[in-house]
Length: 538
Image 1: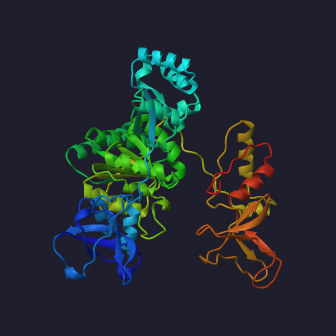
Image 2: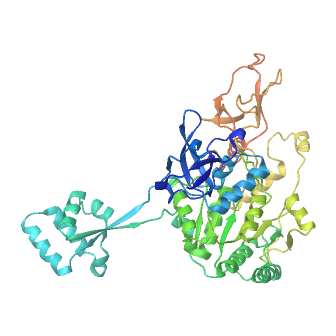
Image 3: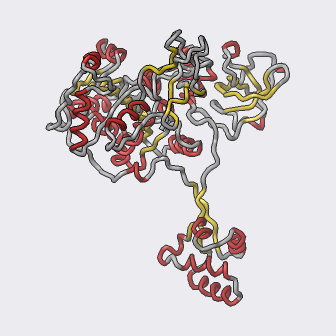
């Protein structure tokens, strides 16, 4: 008899341990490690979901009292065994439950119905079809004639047939007509699986087989990495390069080295907003070997990328921290761009840091890790100082003529003393006007979305807070006026109060500035400029 150790799908510390269940004979083939199952749990034997994390032939309890697995979820995605080991490590290191960790290492948790591409192909030769067409025309079978005309139109592509969708939309065929012709042995209906591709034609760009020539700093990093990799040395590296030093080109050369040895690559980026430009560059170089996964894809797109990765159809996965758990069995390299970004740390249980988890997964699969940043985190820089990570420095920009920008720091107190009450300093206004006159573009950054940082009563000091999270609510504009308060943690919304809920004062005011306020003020100050705001609200 086979017994399964199951983690129940309840994130409670007291239940954070494996429970043993018997595996019925008829479920043995599907009840593998990592499978999702339904099990009876508790006194009432209510059915809940669980994850198999181990199988054995030895019972831990009285067999008569041991319950059996009810079913294996056919729609559930099976976790790779090494990812389960990674989940256990995360549980031990981040003080979470095993259930939460398993859910984290499964970026896709359920199977989605596959997308099928139907083609209608001829089951007979061209001459026979022409005769049949004439026969149908005599009988006034108009719909059948249209279908055969569509097939005969294909010329040298005759045997490949016509898309089912095209026949329905363009030629006015019906499923009943196509079914009838199929049953008569005149047509064949062929179905092929079509993977949903989240990378649009616009993102793919034009293919380019090779990259730019490397400068001395870039070549040194590549040569050092290649020597280590060919000698079987797997360790972490930090590329500390100034902005524009060509780190991305180095990444792609390192990836080429790993791919030549039949390995797979994960490229981590700090946020979804960077996906477009990153994927475009990688797709130009590596083509169909590249895919992307992130939370804004549809369930079908996410599942198809998960399946393509597990089947080995893709070699490179690009995405934010969830891409770290792509089910690559032959992983050779993890690249973590802008490793200092706070987006690599999860706010939800388990509150893991992708940097440490990447190092652990690389260690488990004997892969290398490359971190890149112009401003490395203290943690990774300390690892370099201690010799646990190899440091590469890139001090030159990739394009020899490129220069680092001049940075001006303006004291806004002096602006206020000079009677400039705008959120834009005089120097900034001057530079903006120069750019607009030259028809050039401008980027203004501010690290807060919404209209204002917080809303407070000017009489008693009461700050409007979220009743769920106890954090200050952010003011948002609606139809040109501040009318809505939002919590940026849980999404709770409520109307802007007219009086203070604490003291009844009407002196409610906004403090601090956000992207909405910057946009509003910019349009007023520079009405001729075309402005686009980019944040999570847009």
